[in-house]
Length: 387
Image (cartoon, rainbow, N blue to C red; front, side, top):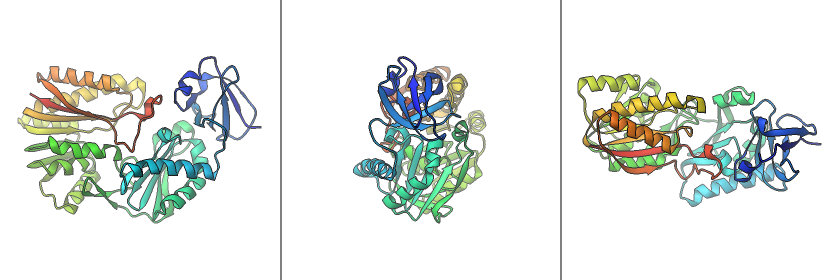
């Protein structure tokens, strides 16, 4: 007999609205016995069936629901769900590089699958998914026929599941860099050691959008492998790409060379310090791009993150020529759109600049946000005209 999880009164409301997570403190009692990571059935306090998901007694997220009716989690289930997820992206025109499976948004909590040309980069972020790694890998081989599958489960969130961080080839051979084409530009992606799964696919449409706003001298902060820099360089006179990582800047130069782009200059250092230094030097730019890493990964860090975002946005606004553009991003879902816009307004006031919103975008459509599951909607992309 498997686990039966009974919720406290009224705790089912959020889950019925589309959320997948059952927190341990929402549970009244657990009946039955099975292995940790097994499929558990969740019921409301009055005995109504809610759904099924993998249980993990070591995690604050006790159960991640993905079955809302009868059925099991066998091979046919995974084949169908992954094909459905990939089919959605294919129908939107994605082909060479895209997120094929986006966890909860695709009804497969804690599973991430990114496609980079002929290779897949995957993350198993929960105990339940980790225990089914071999099964899921076989399904990916059947559906995509990739040359190689590389695991990038070196994510800190796994520690909350009682799992170690790990990475390595699951199938075939994966090169140090694989080439993709995004927005008509060739990019070399470091699947093995790059950020997250190798590259930030969620910004692909936003990277193309900056071409409209980037003229004259452009500054790209936290440039990573140069996705924004390369797109900006197509319309700008010059682009200065800043990052603290020497490896990232080498990647920028390699990607620029791959496309014959010669108007990008890289500069290594702490972006906060570099921005302050440029202000002292009296530098001015026609457009500045801010795409920092997540400054807050928990709700407790929001206040500090707000100050961090405000700091770099104030510095950027003071460096922008009158009439220029600030492209400012946040990838933390705890920094809500309302809070992010409040921060931008305060930054404009403190920098004594007038700012107008030109465009607001979110993550690319291959990263759909599921209603009722706020964690799946996280990316903010604002374009401001700074006067």
